[in-house]
Length: 149
Image 1 (cartoon, rainbow, N blue to C red):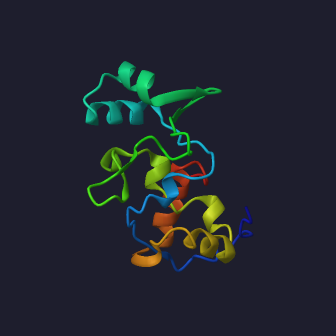
Image 2: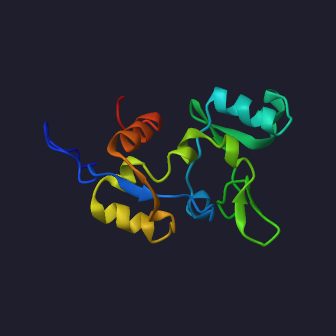
Image 3: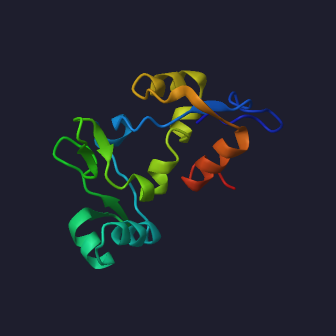
């Protein structure tokens, strides 16, 4: 990631516009991991009315020292399901992991204007909707492990 030099503001210093359309595009496709912490696992388990142990057995896999949500064979998140109109929606949206909550404010997306625009090619919420100020973006990246708080 191209970090601004000391005293230099990032290219997105004036903030960025984003509003989730719940299109599901960021929830599937190419292989990857949706990391889930113990706290998030307990929250999701409660939402699904499962014990934490049952949630881990049914919906999580171990990857090294971490845990990730399971995917479908097409690499979509297992919680990405069709709604009544056939759109893919998140079945756990209100308790989704931090990684999901902080999209699209990931270091890989805000590295440069070009990476932000590239993310916007598959995400209809980028450059639309609510304005997010620099501190909000930085906090989202820090929560997702991209920047120190």
